[in-house]
Image 1 (cartoon, helix red, strand yellow):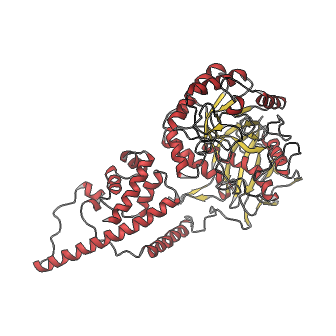
Image 2: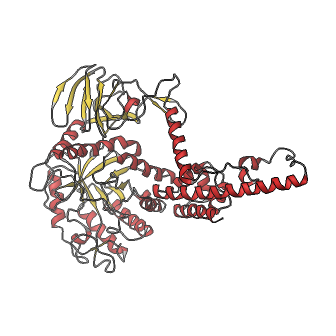
Image 3: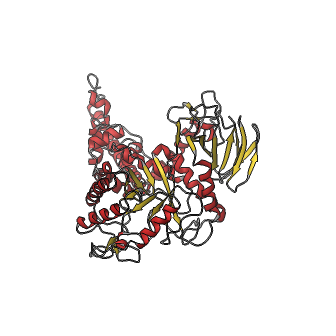
Length: 589
């Protein structure tokens, strides 16, 4: 049947793109290998769309692909049901002519038939609804199940559902509430993640530089990343063997004066090294292709690492892979470049850290597939960390979407047995710079960018590099070159002052940590706290993604700090309103 072949073709295409075998897909979906093979070959139609979705998601399918798969599955299901009905009708007619009912099968069915009945004998299926009505009915069933599942064992509605933008009220921040695991109905209290108190990476509060002046931020940050700072390969080595160090030297000295560790980014192949390569969007003669001769690349890496030994703390080995404006080579070539650079830098400056090339377009299946392909080259074993472009779906989207994207990427590394620390190097080249943020949203989003990095610590995020310092033509300006910090810049400095000397212990959200639905929290303890005593002194930063929520402060709360610099004394039992602008709650010992 053509309908069955349509579904099978889509599944087979996803399988081939993922690079997974039938055995690998079976182990990750909980299906048998033979079942996955039959579905991808069009030999049988899965009895439910959930089975199709499981296979597709393991293969990295996006929402648009899932929608196409649903249509194909509904058509195949309808065609299969019609065939079964026709066969059943034919069988009943033959049975009537014989004058006796069909005999029941002798003995129990084979074990394999019990597991996969559809592969052995036709099943009588209900006559399907037209696809649109069927989808509506399925949606109604899902909603009904969801409504039932938010009732706990004692019959009360579960307070763990997450609210949206409406004002809500809730309990204290020290416990109570709880969430329900939707798969089991189990009631769960506790944060999203929790660890023994651990200091933040000194360079967690990073900033990408967008200036060639050598000037640095006038508010506190933990480190700087050199990209769009006129320090690309084509600018430092405009002719083979001839180096112009002026801008890079000026920038490095500026960072040294401020005691800011530097992450230098390689990228922008000179035109002389890849004359046939496509040009980058930058004004110098730089190309998105790798060099024709990798010896040119290794020579440049050695020159930089030797000159700046012990002055540059870390190297990112390319920028924005996934964007054709920045890199058009193969993953195999990129892996060779990583291996060569790592060998040289480890020899010349063994204390320097190495970040593998930063990958973008990770909201798209295409971008995640490219990252997967690079992971499988084995190049990550030469790096200390992964550099990734983690950002909201849109330039003006809520920073909390980074948490979702970080989890998607973590799954790629986990599926390929590669746990990996992550440095978030900001938005990729594909993000829309023309988006506009209101003054209020800019104030809030600047600090929440770093807070969601803490919340996503479960996905091994160690650093967050904000994009960018010095520029004006970007959605969120923190300080233009030659001008004072904007309010978002001042708030970043204030957040750094709040947290730089603290030890983080946990992050959570809503009733699971005793807060109203929709309120995020990250908790800290002073650096001199030796024991993870839950009754000891602590700090808690709280905020919402949207809207406001009211709650009582719990025992020990004595001071509340706002992002605008305001401070006021509070007491346990006092009701406060949390909103999109984060606040810091301080507790007594």
